[in-house]
Length: 110
Image 1 (tube, rainbow, N blue to C red):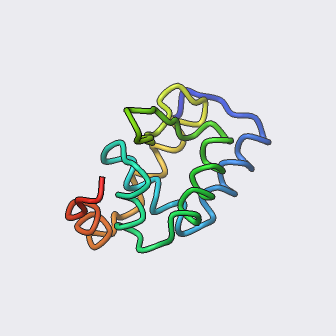
Image 2: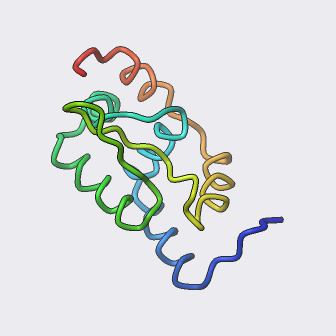
Image 3: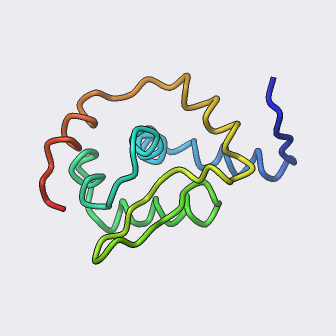
């Protein structure tokens, strides 16, 4: 049983975020490690603007954080989010796409 209680609006926001296959894939990759946009574009074979658009939605909802390191911005799951416990429970049930992970690990663009 979950310890965190979310209100109805938070549930709706979370499930809307998860309704996109690409955002779900992004979250599964960020579950493994913090990543920069170039790693995510390589993994998901999407354009940088498309990845950035999805990350903005995740960040605006508080599910993802960003951290600047030099010229790069790294994204990670937000452990302080009230939705974090629910998100982790859901992500634990979603299978990872091994092709996405392999492409991300092979990228040397960053």
